Image (cartoon, rainbow, N blue to C red; front, side, top):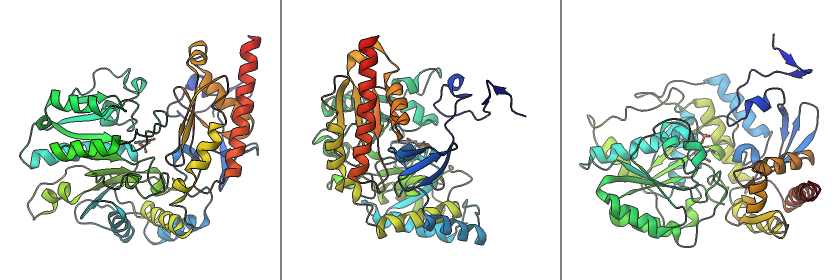
Length: 431
Ligand code: PLP
């Protein structure tokens, strides 16, 4: 029997990234979803301006995905994919992803989410060099503000300082470089030596670290440096994929850039079931696929190639294609950015970012954050009171609605945020 505090439900659910001392009696229980809307257990409706956690690209409550999942569950829920076992949904999904990926002769390694995809990419990058005669190429390069999940490598690769703190020593063969400086990246490669660097990890548009689209020429510059030095280019497309930037993996927005590895998750199923993975180029896969008796990647999780998760992904890909949703991340990026830019003049706002893909951020002014470090959470809470769910980040809030959203929904987001900002400004004056 769960204990109760002041008549409120005392939760046993330890939430990720949560101040459980505050959340323990105050959960927002989401009960139902339909398209861009969700309802809580009290029947209040909210506009889901973040597609849950950047993933519900096709919108909530899609019967097509539910039907595909039910059909697969009643046929074969799951079966191991270790060794030579396979199943039809995993084969079809990997074939479809490989065909759509921008690299030649791609192979797809499956897992359960973005964080384990990052582990796979980090290990695979290092293992590739072990197998191809450069055993010293172990270092991984990553950018400030990067978020690559919270597993072992993901923690070591965290470009958000708070996510690296509090765990004791982390692996040392990681360099963190400013996310917007090609020069510093080049200097770091010079300092370490390319012959000691396995890979560089890049989110095409940085998401959880504050929504930072890359500076013009940055992505191409990283790709060029990788090409010159052999360093593997890992594209973390966990947020940017499956239509968020208007393409399959986001990175195609830079047409001359061909990554060696792409990590994907989230939008691949729109979150209907957990799934993620890594697309590897033919170059990286070759040593492992060349001939029997070659190296074995002793890596992989129980649910790799989970048949029902793959069936959910296939139905989701069908919807992205059938409903023309894939392109919408790009089609709507200007509208969303214009809408958010209406807030740029507000006295509490420092900066509005976005314009590349259907995601954006409103950052609070430095003096507001200095006065009240909890201001982003306050802004999120006030917007929620107006029926709009946005995502508080370090210095502001982010939005990344489902790809089914329209400019009318963007106006609702702006109304809720400006009401919230006005209330915060009045409280500041009064305080
Ligand atoms: N990479 C990026 C860019 C992400 O945004 C996330 C999660 O938000 C991850 C990796 C980790 O994915 P997951 O939470 O599925 O482990």
